[in-house]
Amino acid sequence: TASMTWLLGRSLHRPTLAFNWVEIKPLWQFSYLQTMEKFINYANINFDNLVIGKALGKEILGVYDVCKRLLIQPMYVVNPIITKVSGPVMVQVQDDIPRMRNIALRAFQMAVTINAPLYMASFIGAGFIVPVLFGSKWASGVEPFRWLALVYFVRSLINPLGGVVIAKNKVEYGLYSQIFISVGLIASILIGLKGGLIL
Image (cartoon, rainbow, N blue to C red):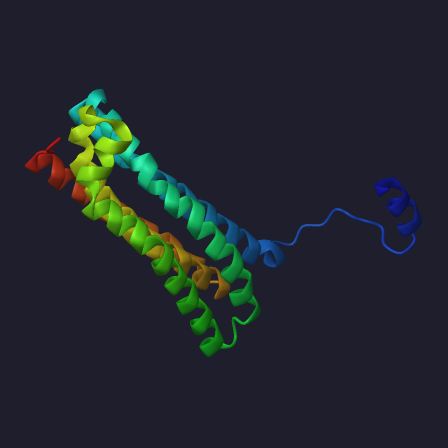
């Protein structure tokens, strides 16, 4: 099919090698900023494991990581559905600020409606949930489970708002937010290690 398209269409348009930095600069900037944001976001999600494993040992890291992987799942399952629906719609109405604000608020409301009961139940009921899911030997995971539930609840609410940044072509704000999260994460871990982690 591609060969036939090329043979029949070459009389109408013959591809040529061309490079114009001015034309590709906006695309390059968008892609570069998005890539950096995703890279820093990945580092943010995994940096705490690296520090805890190094400072407190593999046994404590194992408990922490299992709790973390369980609690991150609702955000990974629910939020992509919300952003895949709301994101393209916001792009279509990016010049209509009231409509885009309404769509963003609806996406945020949906994230709260779905995630809040899951994470609040995990925070409040950690003392019951952890022994039931993992057994009595995992009682040391109750506190990490409880506070990680709160952390990922907050992150699950921030995530859908990223569609607004992309719709308005302000991807640099997404990068700045990830850098801000990195600074807060590093500070939190250093304070926690200094004060001692109770497991």
